[in-house]
Image (cartoon, rainbow, N blue to C red; front, side):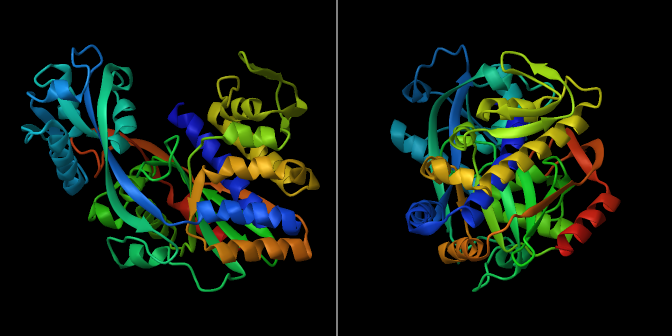
Length: 432
């Protein structure tokens, strides 16, 4: 699954999950199912940094034991040196010897050393692997590396009461209030991994949802993952917003609070396992297409309303080559899928397959919003009913090449924020 697909999935899944929790549970039967799901998603999450041992795809080594006599290439500019040292120690224990290492000045020179066979084995932070493969000249790493072993280095737990921070801003930014306010802001983080949620990873989807529970208005503000921003861990340097997630969800919160001057009350962290199954559990959704076009081997979408299943909704949301205005039409289609999902989630039709939908999301996200506060949202919806009005806005910018804090040594593609657009986003978030 490409990073582009994951971005689209996260935009839709973030809104879907929030509405499922805040507006869908009705009656005792559904409350029991919801409570069971909340016990999983609101449980303390211990973060991990995953390091993996790689060789070239055609290397003779079959397993970790075949690297015992080899020198390990490591990245001297690795963002988490302590965890890398611990990973080397654990690997040494597995092999029964202290590992010899060869240091490289950057992730790029490390990959060069492997490709040029200066070394045969390297240790990589998994969170940076996709960024490496997306860099011009290093696309070969997507298929040219073979993983022999992984070690997971535990970090602190993330709970509703505790978050790590590298500065005062990060420390305070995701500490939720004692009572659910009328208005609050949720950070929806879509990570670029499948499976478990414990591994620190890039955040490829970054959406702020400003919610007003009295007026039932929700303003979504999406920030491109390549936005060139600062956060406390970067020590004054700038980086891609997506890289903030490598240091934990609190660093993404920190970056967005600095960018928009807004206090973020809660976070919701997603992966994309089961997204298609969730849409299918809803019985599909009905979307409006402005154009007739075909996605090969998936579906032909007619101008007007189209009933789609999960796979077809995903294909509709990610297609851009069929349109003259490419990315802009794709963004409109993504918002259309979000609208269709919201309509389905806030209608009685959801109750038919509620158990299946909740089972689908249980392993796909975590949040620091306390269970009792989520349940209070549910009780509010049950007592007063009504539909939610959801508006969306995406900030813009200009593409450029800049060096980043997390991957020094080479200029990467970034988006320089358009300050007028950022100011507009600030106003929208404040106006809910």
